[in-house]
Length: 305
Image 1: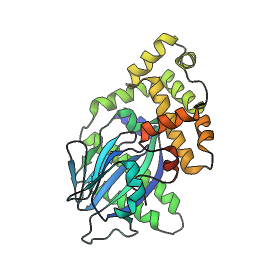
Image 2: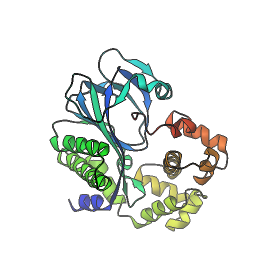
Image 3: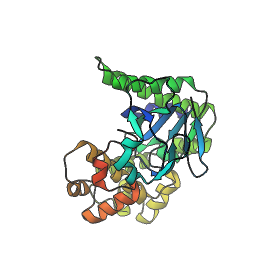
Image 4: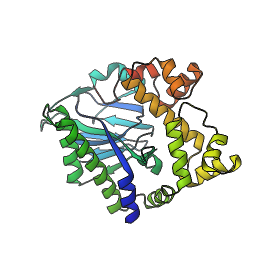
C-alpha cells in the first residue's frame, strides 16, 4: 500500500476538458485516438468499443487510457461507420453539446479528459499499458464526472479551482477502484519498481526538458551513466517500451498541446518537438493520430463540439 501512496502522491493531474453530449445519430468511429485519458459516463442508451463491441450500458463508465487507438460506437441501433478524419468533418450530424445533464429519452453521455503524470513527465496510465475497461456500480466516480461537467458549464467564482480539485479526486478514486478490484496488479507492481529507480527518473526528466534536441541512445546513456549498448535494454526492461518509441510519443503529445494552445505554424511546432523535416513530422503525426496536424488544430477532441 505504501508504494501505491507514493505513486499517487507523485502524480500531477491536469484537467483538459469536460462535456455533456447528446447523440443525434449513432456513429462508429474506427480509429479513435487521443493523447489524454478520457473517462466517460453513459447517461442514456449505450456506447460500445473494441473489436468485440463491448457494450457500456446506461449508468456505466468507460475508461479510455490516452495513447490507445480504439474503435468506438456512440449510440445503439444501426451506426454510420466513419474514420476519425471523416467524422470530424460532419460531427454536428451526430453530436450536440448540452449544458444540462437531462433525464430525457435521448441517448447521451458525459466525459472528462485529463492528464496524469508521474514526476511530471511519465504518462501514468499509458505507462501501465492498460486496455480500455468498463467500470460498473461506482457511484462516486459517476458523481464526480457529473460534477466536473456541471462546473465546466458554470460561471461561478472559483470554477477553475474546483475543477482542478474534482479532477484530482476523480483520478485518485479511479486508482482506488483499480486497486480495490485488483485489476492490472502486475502492471502496478512493475511501475512501483521503476518509478523508484533514480537513473530512470533522470532519463524521464532529461527527455521532458530536451524534446527538441538530440535524444539518441548515446545521449541517454550519458544521462544514466550506462553504456550506449545497454541503455535501450535497461529502459525497456523497466518500462516495457523502447526509449525511442517513448520519446516519439512525448514529442507528439507536446505537438498536440502546441497545436491546441499556440499560434505557431506546423513547421515551427515540428522543429520545437525535434523534427527538422516538416514533411516527415506530418507523416508521423498522421500515422499516430489518424488525422493531419492541421485538422487537429481545428478541434479540441474527437468528441468535443
